[in-house]
Image (cartoon, rainbow, N blue to C red; front, side, top):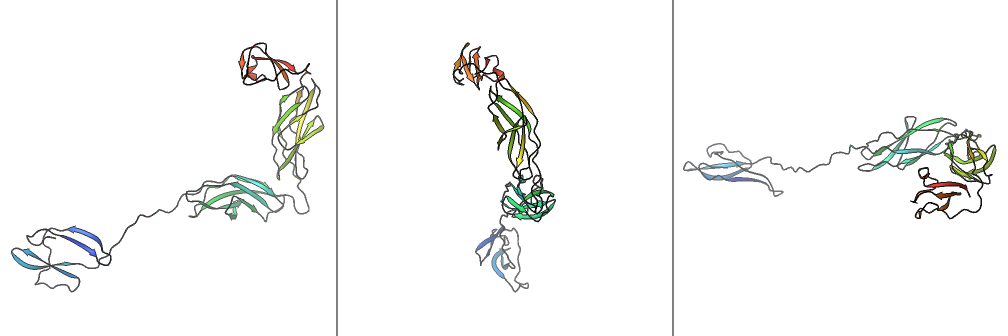
Amino acid sequence: MKIGDGTAGSVRWVVKSAGTTIVDATKTGVDTFLADRVRPKWGIYRSLGDTSGSLRETYLLLRNMRAYELTAGTPGDTQAPTVPDGLRSTGTTASSVSLAWNASSDDTGVTGYDVYRDGTKASTVSGTSATVSGLAASTSYSFTVRARDAAGNVSAASNSLPVTTSAGSGGTDAQAPSAPNGLYSPSKTSSSVSLAWNASSDNVGVTGYDVYRGTTKVSTVTGTSATVSGLSASTGYSFTVKARDAAGNVSASSNSVSVTTDAAGGGTCPAAWSSTQSYMPGDVVSYAGHKYTATYYSTGAVPNDPTSWAVWHDDGAC
């Protein structure tokens, strides 16, 4: 504020109850209420200034002052959780399906999962598994799962999983597993054949595989590989595999694979091949039931590896 030709001054407004300065400003020129005018009857503060050589009263008026403080805010959470994946069935009955899936992630945390049956929300759970009940026997349903967070953001749907419930009351599971496929023989000797295949699927779960030599079941295994022993040298055999479930349902046969065992060896096998030993032409080793003679210098060349065919000569079974 400047009064007459006097020195410019600063005016600081203070909220006395809080003691906090809210305005600090300078104004140039004469801005007064003169003594001969009607003075307001509220909140008047008086100062004296030099106006053209004579003294006049001037007034600074303050009223309706308010102080406000602005603080930084946090925007609302708008990020949805990631999509649950790995949705799978862990069991069925005639009236229910048990499900499990992999956990989702979220910037503020996942609070639950909505489980959908054929597009309709069936339940909301806090963990990564659920059982949907009240279903009809021997009926197929499609299930998906969505994750949600505390702000109500919901993820996209998981993979869709079709599941068929078990047979109705008084019945048993009558659905057989799918047939194993991809049966092949990774190795053989003069008296055995090793087999491997792709896993079967089942509405309640595969419990094992029956291995057949011709029409004769020779073994039952829980995994997807087996070795059939006690065979004759230089003899052809045909193998198939069938899957079974807990109810005793058995699948159709896999593809058939024909394998001829190796010729019988003469005498005992030489020392076993070593991946760290260096060999020179003429060295003799045994590997996987066969006798091999080195034809070149080598270290680490596997005798029965097709890419090492020029390094080793297969002398037959031993």
